[in-house]
Length: 326
Image (cartoon, rainbow, N blue to C red; front, side, top):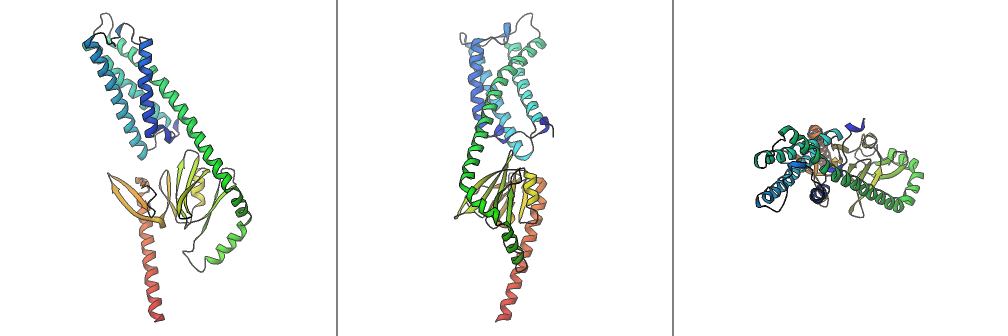
């Protein structure tokens, strides 16, 4: 897939990223306008006159509101749709055009400059707004990407050090696990199964019972595996593609409910609708609600109904067995 069509990283639409970005844009733009007059003869920013100061504050506040609303809308859209790099760039361009248009309208109506036409003024405004916003956007994006990768690396190294010895033993016992699984499965259809998760190099990193596995969350090139250990939910960062992991989970109780989430259907306690979005609640209170996208909703509902029917048949069978025993 071309780079321009890839989905943007999640950190670029996170609340923390948006807050830091807008704060940095305000500081950078103030410093930029103090050093350089970006609109040449049409500049009217200042504090010396009441009218100039009032419109300067109005323009700054309006621009901040535009950015906040735009990024909030982007954050909401990213939770429902895939935002590609091309879409992100076009989104930023629209922000620049709206802010430039606001400046042009104020200038033409309240600070007209003889000899400067509206098209020239609008073009000049768009160029300078683009420069002012592009530098903070680029700086914060690269810094956030660096911090995100450092956090992922630190988490992966820590977990690898803690679990390396354990998984070396598990790797040598895979044949025994398969033999045990094949021996147990004829006795119980719902017997717990072991899931083996490999990284991009094909190396086994995690072997876990489906009864302990709750859900998986994709984060860029990593898969975050959430499971229960010692009566609490812990996570393991696995460098692998979502599609590869999904292939290895076929035939298990794990199913995809969102482009970023794969859940254990046996752990679902509740599925509800909230503001036209559906969410899954798992049977551990420490886990936040997990969204269900429209493209996977029907599949999830069908699987839940099938699971309910299977459990009902099991209960009927057990009741009949107990009656015969009595």
